[in-house]
View (tube, one colour):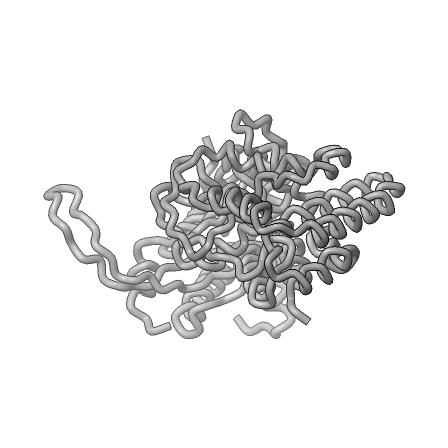
Length: 346
Length: 81
């Protein structure tokens, strides 16, 4: 059981420690406390060095219930006192546990395996555009009938960059040649039937309802790590289900924002978009309440080809989370700052 | 008690130091008419860390709470902030 001291004990302890009389010690305690109260009343906030900050917080009126009679009563708006200990004191109190850090969880849900992959992908999402879209793009311009066959190439390029990271440098020239050949082939043999065929699959997938099992999130992810041989297959691979327009999604138990982002955008890092859109409904981004109705905003561009507005929204989402975590003095704050800067349109 | 500002500062710091010592020793302190300071253990919990991109177990920790007395609560209730 925790030992509880009262004012007299405190006064005695001060007198003993500082060698002053009990009267002086009592005077000190009384004055300090009075001072804190006064400042609270006047300034609504007071910082005591070495201890922490006392602050008044406004509490809006709400409906409560009388526990005896069960009748509803309105609790009027009022202020409450909050206390935030200083960082040093916080650490001192937590000394016992300070060496502990996060422990990874072996997750039963298959979805948990997706995020680590995503981490690797993060820095690359924009690269494919600069590096090798050239062989595809000119053809695109000349042949307006051809848009459907184009979706696969970005993924192929994406694979290249991914694997080059791991040191397969020879793959880049090979892939460029293959893409160039494919582009030429597409250009010369452009026939309407084929393009129509290729057109249908992605549309079908967009119809998939949000009620689907989260397991499907994995499907769009796996091709990313596939071996480069896959490139040769011209058939379109499963694309992430990108919402055609803003969707309304009712959270199921066990849903996390990053899962939704994986499902709807194919990139769980885009969860900041969902957070941005629904920030007023989300108290804790790491623990969203089931049954909440969230709006899944659509992307103007695509996952690999973000429009300016998309980038702005992403940056904004990161900024909001940056502020959210900064207030809480969370160690991860800086990551959101980098996200914010990365997507800021230039 | 007539003291200089510096002396007052020293005294307050000494008081804060004493309080820190008490709290780090896991002792609760009730100051009459003001409120109660106490430490509380937060149990380890499962959560998702968006930065690590993983489900993790957050470690247990100890935190310091302040619970204002009814008197203090009543006093600040209806101040305009």
